[in-house]
Length: 413
Image (tube, rainbow, N blue to C red; front, side):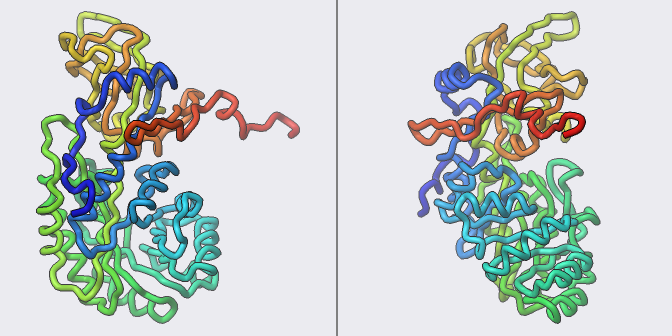
């Protein structure tokens, strides 16, 4: 059995070493992203073991940090990219361009130009498109290589309506049109696959609907026929709340295989969140404690610029006082320094009584955490530290204000 197969299916915030976290906060400052590369490997290997003989690609958009990409490439994963920058970063991390899959969603001209140029010397690269117009634009650039058609199954699943891509018209060609589009595509390109992505953050309660969508996609693939692969995307989630059970990937793999059924094509999957979500957290330091009649407001130096998911998706992230985890819990609201009511990580949440200078950990920040970080309020983005067993290294330095202003020009320049 692959190494990591028997690792716990989810890493809770209480599983991290509090003393080590406090030491990292003291050394590198806060807010600070802390990434566990061993956990990244474990998650990938567990997922890969659940889908024997399938082609498992890591969806780079979840976390494109070079430390993550290099770790997964070394573990044997290929990379799926959704933008030009992800293609370039995958290559820079050591990926063979012939192994890359580029999933184009309303791609800007510069993205298509880069992909076509990259494929000119690397004919193994596959371009996935979800609009007839995108195929026309590829042909206009002289591209005639490997392509896949992204279809829309009409069913969306996941943790929020904003990630239920399987029923969003933005993503993919309606499955009823797939056979006609395939005939047209085959005249101009090397059609090798069919692709669909149903949604993100799928847990046990969503799995039946997720598999129903996969059945539709597989049925469409059989109608199209003569395919090298069927790519059913990713979307498999991790439990963000402490009382949510994790997916058991062995049984999940069997259910997905049953949903696909007999198919003369290789199954492909693109896990992203599942691989990195619980492998990273954020450390933030308390600067203000304000006890008012309604609640206790705890101000920290992290903000929605550090982690936007609570503001964007109303997402739950576990929070723990790693400076004093054994204190009596107090119901608190934790928020950052931004001048908006959206800059709140939790309300009415029991946390071990926080005092000024305490270090809090915000868990499950590895997926779409740093990727969605911004410079709102002219806040430099945080540093990122990777741990790997007993080793620790800085993998992303903390931005300074001059980094925020670097691209600006003075009048007359």
